Length: 494
Image 1: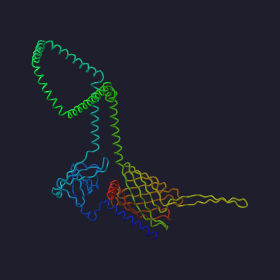
Image 2 (image 1 turned 90 degrees about the horizontal axis):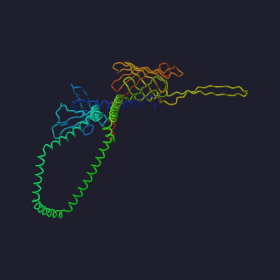
Image 3 (image 1 turned 90 degrees about the vertical axis):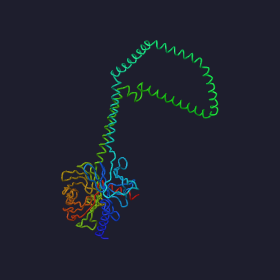
Image 4 (image 1 turned 180 degrees about the horizontal axis):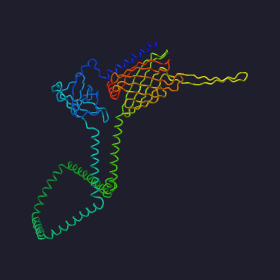
């Protein structure tokens, strides 16, 4: 197969793969998928939900979020549902997530299956889950309450003020005892009358007690007969009472031991009640926990703001005067850690390979004793796989990159136009080569869609043997595209 045919076959395969990804990423309906039904739902908040997020019923994916828009003070989203999904009156939607930190999606409740179908144009009622910030706010409020309780204990029971209040309580008890003695002395006649009544009651009891004893003996006989008939049940009940009393005694002992430790200032609660330093340390620990939670929140926020993109491009170099490979391909990733800084790592299939220059020295001694030295430089191409590893900085309308360009040092400048749909690039690298350094590359790239781009330019114009026009295209996938592709692949795997 000729080199031109190989290039054509490679481009055809790349275009087929590119077409499949375009269909999947852009949600182009094919076949029965083109009959998707559209339903709208209104939510108070859809934070974390993006276009192309999945829609599920009972955990089963039945469609995607097609569009999100603002309707006054609420979020109005359009759901594209698979054919055959039936929604009944009373259906509602909810924004939820896969686990604590998973991706957000829309969970649909289709309503009562016996109810009539949902009328066309109806807007579903949506609800949003409690956010992580609200949970942190509740935890902060609880921490504030704990601080107030410890402050109140320290204020009421600690220091000279607490000692004064305890002395006041003891003085009130002493006054109450004195008033009780005075009350008894002032009402001694009534007390004597009460004692006389008890004496009369004892005389009456002396007369009636034999009659009562006879009745009790009769009752005891009857009870004895009943006990004999139910002795086994009574023994079991007594055993249960004995076991219960033992447990109550153990619980009382444990409670006495706990209260004793608290009174002696032992353990955390004892120190908290009896020592001011413990309360201060507890407040400091609560503040440390609060600062740790805030640090964790800030760290998670920075990680969530990172942006990742995967790039695939291929290009033809028809002007190269070479019988070998006349195309270049690259696959890599770009990580943006801040709004103005990014890192790029690519594996490049270069048509020229990686050049290594070695020097060999040969010394020949003639029969007459003369020495002849020959120095030879040998250039070898080891392989065609090279690496781009660069760090870049964004400015207003331009970007500056530096690092490895096809495994050699270099720099690059990118300028943006038309709201970043058009990008012009100049790269200079391989400054140490022998012929016409450095290697220059001029390129103009235009994004046909958000993911697909085409570009043209001129490669290495300073070296006529390798100078060539550039014609190529590629595709890029952002964070949301990668999430959708991974979700699609997982659904195929099931």
